Amino acid sequence: MTFEEYERLAANTAIYPKRGENLIYPVLGLAGESGEVAEKVKKLIRDKNYIIDAAFKEEIKKELGDVLWYIAAICYELGISMEDVATTNIKKLASRKKRGKLQGNGDTR
Image (cartoon, rainbow, N blue to C red; front, side, top):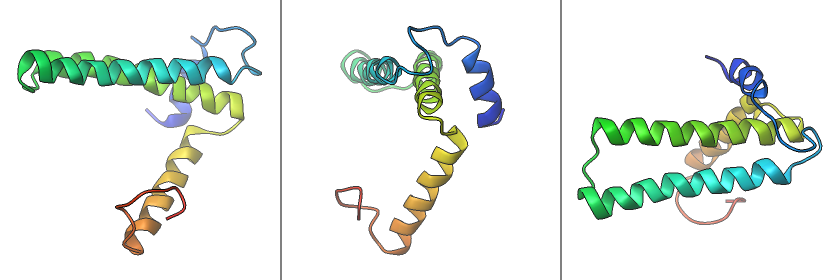
């Protein structure tokens, strides 16, 4: 599946107030779902001695799917494509690697 296909299919399930002019809703949803990913990993450490099994992978895959859905919704609200986000990110990382700046802090390194 391409990002374009995903965005189109995800849009079919995007039902929230003032869709198309409501950046806040998907941003808050992304924060919540990202927190759920972190919570699952925290419990993996606490309850399962950090042993990653098939059940954990299935659970985390669902949560990552929710993260992806909210990213698609944010892109929709901003009028940018997920493909553009991915391409921009890879270019940024390639530039950092070329300049020896993958490690460190800050968006402008």
